Image (spheres, rainbow, N blue to C red):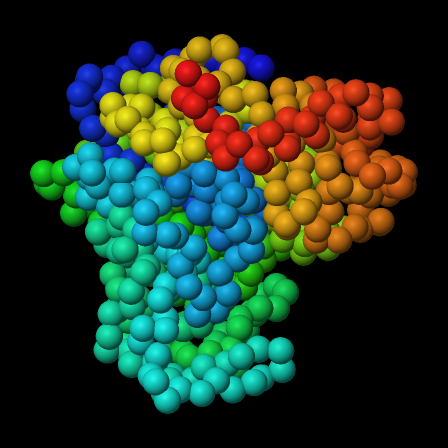
Length: 504
């Protein structure tokens, strides 16, 4: 693996970050976005993504970047802790679920705060709160189908909600915690902005444009409008960036979009902006919002001292099969698999870093990297010594970002559900299960894209250097490689760490 530096004209004009400076950090995180949705990753994409394309032209695009999981909560946890989620849990935080963080776990925002940063989270949280603390003692849940439903009268909305973003390193928070989970209202820092006063009622909302609402029942503010999620959070992000211009501290902003996760609800002005239906239009709206955040950096004069990191929590939802059939747009191009799957499409995600003075404009790196590595990379840049009980799986990517052709990371463990793992080592990828599907197999899609029938083996083995799409299972041909990778997987799972600093 090596980093291929494609130096564009005027790259020499990018100002360097002086030694000792503490750059601002903006992490932009999309939700259920496919690697192949971005034009810069897939020239055949039916979705224009001009702002992300421009970001890639100004920074470094990683072609082999991964999330820890194929679903929301675990990937976010791994990014914010530098630790594989599967060491602690596998599933998502459900409606009114508790925090996945334990108090003693050092988080990325806590580290940044210790280094003198103002820290903020805007948008989707999905890492839990202590809702029991504001639930009334006499509250009784109702059953609605398979759901346990709490009503707006069951909570004291005037109270602070503990164990959320502010309890784990963020100075500020603004968002709705999860777009399709109750409570349906804005939360600022640790209190709701307006108390929910009715139960969720999707008939009050403008008609959905693709798929289903997929919103779980529960308390809602009567004037709640999910279509206003992206415009409102983006405006808050722009406001925050401008406000930091005159601040005496650098900032760390974690901006997590709810899109293009369901419900697929692009605003009217974005209808028809893609050739991939409402989903494509929703991706285009997300790209537009990202452009507003980047423009705010430009307008406030902070671009040259701000690290921008863009990625997504996992691959696209299973509606991608129908989208491929209808619009001939495969969101996971060039990979097999979708959200939840441990095939590449489930966790091989867009990954772009623009770091003035560090990354070269228009550079492309094909080395194996992970979102888990962000914590060690920022720690290294700030001279922060990570303790032994923190960021146990995080690798320092600064050498790669500076153009070193030697790989930093040679292995990565992929997982969504308990008991189903895959391990990547160099070019080899072992699916340590009968297959890598979790979201389900689609025979029609496999036929269209040239996949043969499952051979019925216990595991699958692929050489990604010649088989990016995972079509040719080599497990039967190379049983020794299978055994070696299984042994490596067991070791990495049992030893409790994978970061290089533990080997010294």
